[in-house]
Image 1: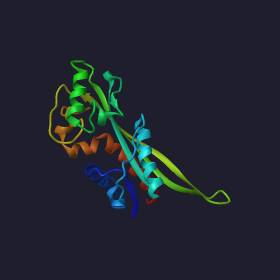
Image 2: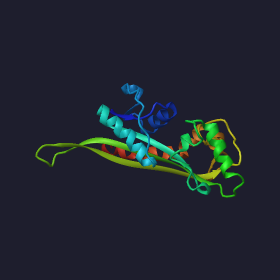
Image 3: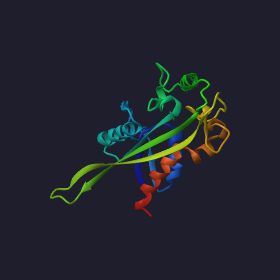
Image 4: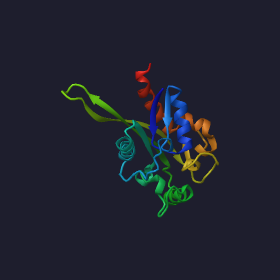
Length: 207
């Protein structure tokens, strides 16, 4: 069984990723490796934030690691909230209600409700270069992206999920993520699509 660290303690994310990766992998959380650090996440893109978290764990704990970052991108708002999705409302941190209210207020009655959820996973693996006189160790970074297109509703609906789920309606459905529930969301979501790409890559060496 191959061990790999996912830079999170979010139980929802851990359960989803463990299910997709299957029994060939043992996915460890930050708590599992006794990491209680406040990992920096201060870049301007999803890619940079995900890489920053994964590299932090690899540098400090010497373990292969992957991390994710997710943003909601609304066309009429120029891509906002994007990388700032979790802290969109002023003076808040992961306050979903405040974030949704700010987004709905800024959109108002705008007829252009097009939006997308985008997840980027950065995988940092430590590898060796044996083509030199003295083998060199280096970090190999791979990115995996998942996108789900949809629209922003005019008001909240549903009670499942988290974040912006009550106001995001994925294409092909007439209900929000919060109404569809986890079973459906986990099959079609941005994170599920990015994780499946990660799983395909990780499993390449054990097939």
